[in-house]
Image: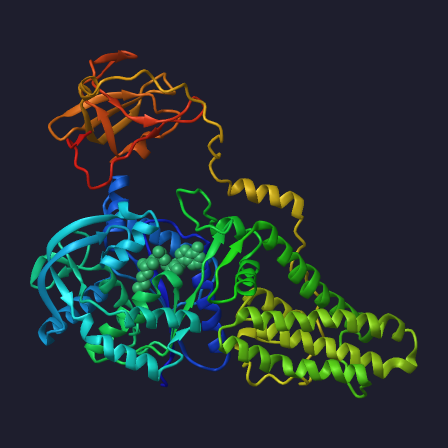
Length: 638
Ligand code: MSP
């Protein structure tokens, strides 16, 4: 059994449901997997979820549930979506899987024994959002981006990976493997980073519990990136004992390239394992040229777009994104693309051509016996079509591959207009020319169907069947399909491939389905700043950090919520007017600022012992003031 083409996606964090960014990565990988199968290669395609670490631990705490329960919930979202979208991965790996835990602990121990991992004390800055210690330079970068609040001072005993030792071997490897990272400009970023010098990497944590324990020293858990990257090792093995190592292609987003192109190969060098052949870093889908994020409320979820069908979404992703670059997502562009290329373009051409073969030739495939100059030109372009598509897809340039195909398909509309088959059909003397025109159209559609099987699997199959072709289009070898092969049988009735979208109607629906929360009013509705008070007066107010432990609505009030709040020294009942802005569930486990020495007062019969601070103007909802997650209940706010 030859080694399969081993292809991986990143494994997704389970702190949130999938959005179109995650779907894009997986669609790209799935198209590449299908393409390689159609080139006759066995493929192993791995995807899955990254379940340990602080991000997930925190997200679970905010919901008041165990991290594994959150992971199970989000994993179901992923696996359902991939099943609905017909993804063809061979394994969905979870970092909580037993065989993965075994891989991580085994390699940790081996590297500890070989000296590539050692224990020492780390003192310095730590980025909570990246879950990584940061160098002075990185800290300055974060400060410049206004992200300094993500940094905390940390001193802890930790295990280090001897990354510095691999600086030179990595640079040598890059020099001898010019295609290791694609595209080139990203490879240059990686090289510059390594040339800037590598420090040893902390690969264990004592500050969190949710992770794989370090073997023999269980108060440490393995750093989430060491854990996560090794999924590719665990997942290389199949159920029958086969091993697909090493990866032929690893697809990652630009944001996680450094982990894959620097740390990961260094780990593999230390392990004495073969390195991946190529890492493909794609860009991001943006919204209004901005990063998609929950807080901005501009995340596009796949369900919003999947109502147009899985194939349409796949086509749009692969056609409109030039791998490596960022691309702004817009509903209008999405609809225009599908209408132009699928409804008017391919769909229209297919139904027109197949109907003509039915009408003029009773559905039988006509032979092209005679060609004039214009036929020969189109025929020659058609012959070159599949090899060009294959070359582009091999280089993962689906947008160029599809663009080339559509340039040809659009050209066929002109060819039809020029040849006027409806006129040719009226005169028996033109029978040979009509045969040729119809044969060229048939061949073009057959090649398009085969080429599109990796991009739009269902639509390609439907077209294949309409052409009267047997079996599965996905089984057609792209390197063997002959342009002018005879057709085995008559064409079938053409089924519409893609229904035109009513743009006006759907645009407003789509935009409201995905509407950002109402933007805050540009003009402030607040009174003037109040009269001056002296510091003593202000300091009489005792402000404390609290954590909301319980929350429930006060019966018969749509505004009041009764909460139990932990103030470190004691727990309090506090009634707050938050009911129109928050659901009780959303309040659980939140850190808040409490006015702790406010005289108790009764609200709807319940005695409230304090008040939560919130920000608002007259027109907005109250936004609770949130201390950083590390501030403990009872901390003084001043
Ligand atoms: N868990 C890590 C990866 C570990 S791999 C050993 C992680 N997970 S993630 O869920 O945050 O992101 C997974 C992938 O989704 C990344 O490749 C990332 O680039 C991609 N995307 C996230 N948002 C995206 C867009 N808006 N557009 C395109 N892809 C984006 O990082």
